Length: 498
Ligand code: NAI
Ligand code: MG
Image (cartoon, rainbow, N blue to C red):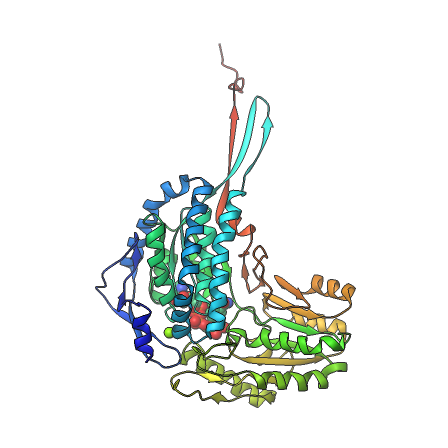
């Protein structure tokens, strides 16, 4: 049934590299796009290597001078058209992602509205991204921002539409051209996006090379004509991409993993507790826990611990685990058997080293035999445990009891990551002090997962380098050039000898 659905959705049987607004014929090896929940085959995709990357980079390089020389308003108009096209195609695209990656339609729908609004945000932002200047004797200094050229961008599988938008929108708005490598577990929707791109953009501005990390990914990061690298994914691969950038001395921006604290203070208003429980559940289970921002370490104060915990367990048990194509909020399946086994191993570690509160088992969903579904799982543990220190990327929450504020701050920061943090309190002075002291790029007070356009999104420590989602991102995709102009040539510095 799923395969019929795939046909109804107009998927191609095979996708080659997207270069110069065309899918290249596939000559070499392919890999398969499969439905995460049913294991059914959705399409074949070219396993790109050095040759495809070469063609894509050269196309991007050819397109660069004309694209760069457009006025910001003109580039903005292209981005708005892409946003319009995404909005028109959203119901189809979200179904493609839901089939391919196993997240519920409710979530992939949100992905597309965030993605479309990112294109619009950067369309607007680039128009006001002026340089600066000042008068100098007999002239002027002008400092302007210039795009780097060809950007090599590598994205992961968890929220493909948002990931593509976060990379394409700022880079292209700023006048760069791009070559993107989607993740081998979630390439379909980026390739489908190419069909929209082909109708809107000049050839070569946006190119896509699907394939594996060590092949297409490594070829892209090593390519001598790529002027800027951007990566989202694990900290391990972020390090490899960083080294590739260092070898070529090109700038690298990284958005990596997280193990974010979510802190509940004892003074929370009892009337808010249900909503806080819901926030905590959402923070850890949204995206099936496969989000770098997930609030996976819950610091729960001793004074409210038992009451909160029983409400939290009830909230976790209420979550519907279902076929991702069902309507409404639900827990779908993990991206792949590999990710499923990884989460299973962490749950086993938890069962031997921590105390299981709820969940802990794989779940069976009718008609979705291939899917790796898990019950929402909660462990009580210490901050030092592997469960609390390592990014699991599944529906697993670690709860840590606290009662001493200084120890709380120490523990919340005592982790290699620093992407996000949440905290719940009615004491605004304490909230602000805590926000200042948390080592995280994003602190949410009395809310979680709240990313408005313009909100910097980037990590401290091993969570990354640079900020996406905001105006500052345009600086990441441009370098400064100073031009000084004088009406008259200065008097000679070395006097002529007569
Ligand atoms: P990964 O970091 O291996 O994959 C991310 C991207 O990097 C993919 O497009 C992949 O093809 C590419 N890649 C892999 N090796 C490469 C190389 N040598 N050169 C260039 N590109 C390369 O992530 P993976 O293995 O899928 O997931 C493992 C763990 O990573 C997850 O369990 C999670 O903890 C973390 N992760 C974090 C993400 C985030 O948003 N921060 C997203 C995905 C994974
Ligand atoms: Mg898939």
